[in-house]
Length: 306
Image (cartoon, rainbow, N blue to C red; front, side, top):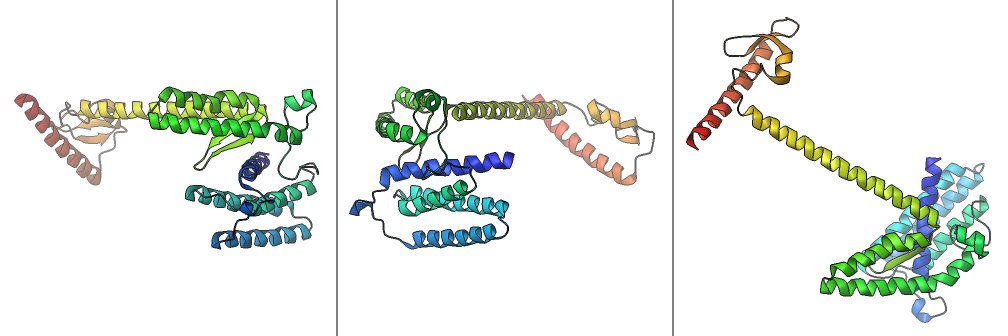
């Protein structure tokens, strides 16, 4: 079940990202929308065709669904890798290739009955709004996306001005819009290098993700505080040890529980069970004792000097 949910989330996020890129850069009716295939695009196409062939073979092999799902995951991975590379370069990706990949994955999932036939790309957007308004997910997306895109672009311009002017309050409000306001409306904004990605997601999913994020952050803070306490305790124990003489170092704290008898210098001669300390163990204890003696003498000298 966990694997299925992970697969759905991964593919869904890929669909939403591709659809956002298509809205921004895919212009099939304009000469400006044509993007020349460079070496990176040709490599992506080769990987795409290879995976398509492997998926075809898996389907012919008694419909090997598991293998098909694994190949789809790889297809999503290479698509995301390509998008991230272009994002870092600051240039739009080849949307035609991405559209073909996303459409192909959608077609496969439609074949398995996971997506309704009328959807060209991605899963349908399900929300309580659809049920009460009677607006289908495709119509909802077509209706609201121009407004959401305009809002995202306006927010991005405001953020850039606020960064230049170092207006922290405005940046905080921009973050609040992204993290608190829009998720309540079923909208996710993702700040990327080139632009803000707009994703229409059902509100319940976003609320669940927000709770998981809060829980993860709380756990991170708790672990950080725990490590800080452990470091402080170790440091306190280390400082306390500086004032313990070598004659007493094996007779105090947890060390005292390990042994039952000591010689005149305070070096253990017998273990807690009465067994005599071995020669090898004796050498180690003597070495520790000598190190403690030097540190103790140094501490005492520094204390006397101050």
